Image (cartoon, rainbow, N blue to C red; front, side, top):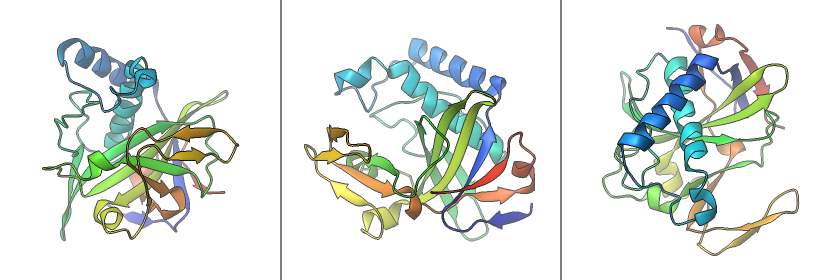
Length: 220
């Protein structure tokens, strides 16, 4: 399978199908009903009411990633603090090493992404005993009036580089931050911020190029 490595700051956009959304929605509905597990956001009452949507976003990210790289789709929808998958949504094997990938998905208003946008990773996840994660993969979803749901595949984050301080910035719980638009928020737990510009771009395959809506984009 031919692969193309993109330049830093480049990301991929593809269309998300109705079937993928239905699969993720059914996965969430089944898991909420049958798998009574805690969520990493349970301590935050404002986010607790958003459980279904947050699990849907996470599960949809896993479904999209699986389909992009011909991997098995997820069988359960976890939002768990207990980490039933031990931070390993996917295991990718290569000739040189294995990659245990944890998918990090988010929703944004637009697919026009900037270099100073960030992915937040709670310190408790990064340093969780027994975690199998070697890399994180960041996906951003937005809604287009003309093209429906669009996934932006931003790329990989090396967990060890984050642990060693080679990338990312650590903010302690209680730290108040101001966004680019002037709004402010407070970290509820100690968190690593990773700039989109520091995320290694995804790998492009011939099959990925054939997915509806495929296009290459540059961080602004």
